[in-house]
Length: 427
Image 1 (tube, rainbow, N blue to C red):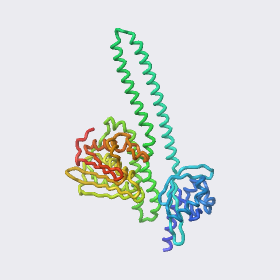
Image 2 (tube, rainbow, N blue to C red):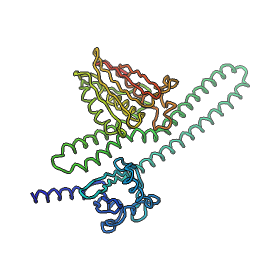
Image 3 (tube, one colour):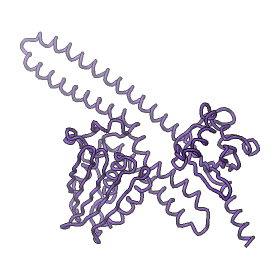
Image 4 (tube, one colour):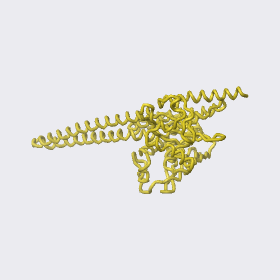
């Protein structure tokens, strides 16, 4: 029994020391009691320099000065600001360098006292990627400005040529017609360039918004994997590893959607038709959506069918379901309710996604599926205004129908109807 206990302690210590993310354990006074190798490497301190000191040594001001009061406020009010929730914060290394990281803190109640365990995930690479994307956007905008300047010069040259040609009386009518046609071509080209500039300038904000959900799933699963330290919990670890893999695949799909938006508009999207079990796809998406629910939100899953075979495009169908449910979660307040129903009627599957969120104002509903449109009551919520536009096009590509019902302050319900067989889809 003692040997098994010692083995268990050794396994836990090995996992603790070899974890990729930093792990820091403090007491209720904010004093560091344990750190793993990743935490020491991340902050640049030795174990002797960290253990026994206040954790605020790892924070820049004013967070370092106020940290002890944060702990006291939590212990007094039990209202979490970060404990059990997690958020992005700034850390300070031994050399004074500051860096961003995601901090998830768990409260652990022992027999005679309470400790706090912090999981530190470095976000430096993500932030650097955002900076590179911003730089790329600036370069693209510069190119658009240069192109616009060239087009304006061309227009001015045409106007000058027009004035000269007007002097040629015998060819006046023919030349004026030619000039009008050329000017129209230039205006169309200029409008196209401006539209492209708008798309590219919004790419960074779209990527930041659309990538947040799967990144949150990855971070959550990584934190949870660290808790499953027993051998019999391998199935739990495998479950979260699968979620991470799924989220990475989802990220790749989102990026491809953004980069191929013009292709979608031009009707050149490739469709892969296969026969698969829609119930399996449905359950996979529902499991993934549970990981992004807000505090106290409820996701009620109902399946009114035992039939699951459908001939369609699996990837497009999955993107449709993910988009609708994630939107419902985003636009529903904490403690809200999202009802997701899969139904089979008359050789077609119907998908219902209903929330009791903010609803869509009546005057905005006619524009809901337009590209980049945002409802007037959603301007303070992050979003690109592309999701429903893409979903609408996807549903049409699968020969389906999409409708919705909404009332402001009451909620919104989207209904998707897809045929069970789509052997002749063309787009």
